[in-house]
Amino acid sequence: MGLTAIEKIIKHNVKKESVKAGDIVTVSVDRVMIHDIFIPFVASKFEEMGFKKLWDPDKVVLIYDHLVPASQLDDVRHFKIGDQFAAKYGMKNVHRSDGICHQLMTEAFYVKPGDVVFGTDSHTTTYGCIGAFSSGIGYTEMASILGTGNMWVKVPETIKVEINGTLPEGVMSKDIILTLIGDIGADGASYCALEFTGDTISQMSVASRMAMANMAVEAGAKCAVFTPDEKTEEYCQIELDEFQRSIYGGEDAEYKRVITYDAADFVPVMACPSSVDLIKPVSELKDISIDQVFIGSCTNGRLEDLMAAAEVLKGHKVAEYVKLIVTPASRKIYQQALENGTLSVLSEAGAIITHPGCGLCCGRTGGILSDGERVVATNNRNFLGRMGTSKVEIYLASPVSAAKCAVAGKIVL
Image (cartoon, rainbow, N blue to C red; front, side, top):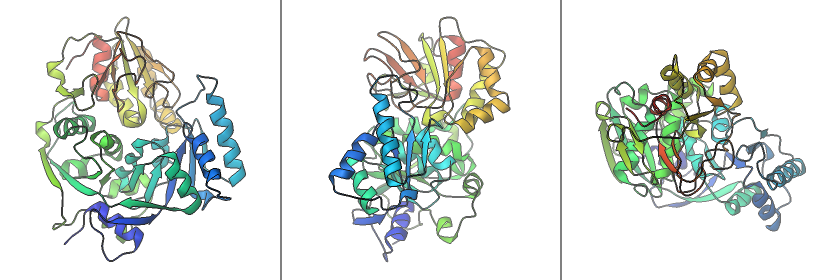
């Protein structure tokens, strides 16, 4: 029996003859990420467990992104505890407002294809875009890894998603993942791996794959995985080795389910308030007035996303009484968008351009909304209270769709 892509990664890590879905194995962790929200709890639990040193300080990455700049007094406590912990245990990989954690982990080359990675954030699934096994965990599990370098996992079943053909104009990978979530439901991939394949996927940039891997968790997935290829090599600035090139599902691999799509059938869609699997075509939502548009986050804050929005906005102005907030996913992306003129186009259209971070997406700062307001956003969650009060309506969309709405002042196709 052949192996799925995730089974191959885990088998290689644990050095066993074979693994299968449902097996409980102990993996050797290649890298971990802790963000600023969780560092006080991780630090406290680590010392409560009696550990005296990190298993490998160079494999630990601490990223301040959710709470920067501080919007509440207690935020500063997180920074102080994080800095003290890093200094005490010799951590060198600390990023203070360099960007969003899930962007930095691949952008700064902390993760490579075939790695086993855990992070204290559910959207750690993002690193599957380059062919890694990556998943979110809690602070107790993270503290244990910091002391031992190991983590137990149950080998997940795999749902194969095969997409072939050319996407219609105006359709982005965000529309694909939203459509999939709508089709299988918010629990349709619970504790499964989503394995994406097909020639549509091969044509995608790594950035587009990142948006899909990022939102795999919104269907309940444990992880997501894309086969590493020449685009992965270019993005990671490596040459794939034999193992990394083998990270794809075997022809006789056993899948829990196989879902196939014709790329030509996809249309622009939105996730409607307040469920990420309440998906409707944009064509059915026209003329709903909006108060704000958000383009950015770890889902859609990459250069290609900002450029796609700028292409729509060029020569236009944001509608009167509508706020357009743009948040690049990292300082590097911010600089690239500045150098190629993208930020200039967005600014001239009336966008408010913020520092790279998670503030608005996680409802901390930088544009939170109040009762009765409605926002079209490119981030990953539209739960009640996610971006302000529980009476805010959040529609999730692609950067192209979001930009069109910003110009019109309402939801338009």
